[in-house]
Image (tube, rainbow, N blue to C red; front, side):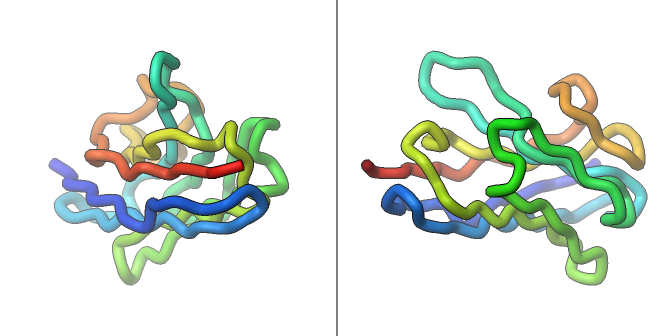
Length: 124
């Protein structure tokens, strides 16, 4: 069992930055990959970033590549999402998730545990 708690969401202007954090407890943190997803009203949950168990491999969709950075601190059982150059289209609830394997993935089915989400709103 893994418990995940996100923090760091909020309201920011276009072009601004936010850093999301996700604190994990339960199973040994460095035994599984982690991911971030987002969901806007009326839309499906969308892959944002993933990182493998060691932090050495990361994945991003084209929509956020070059603007978002995922990282993890295994000593603190925490994964981060640094978001720069934010756009109104980035507005969504952001969820962190713990993968079923050491590598994560870009599908929701790759993840077994989910946090409760944190709202990110980007104003124009």
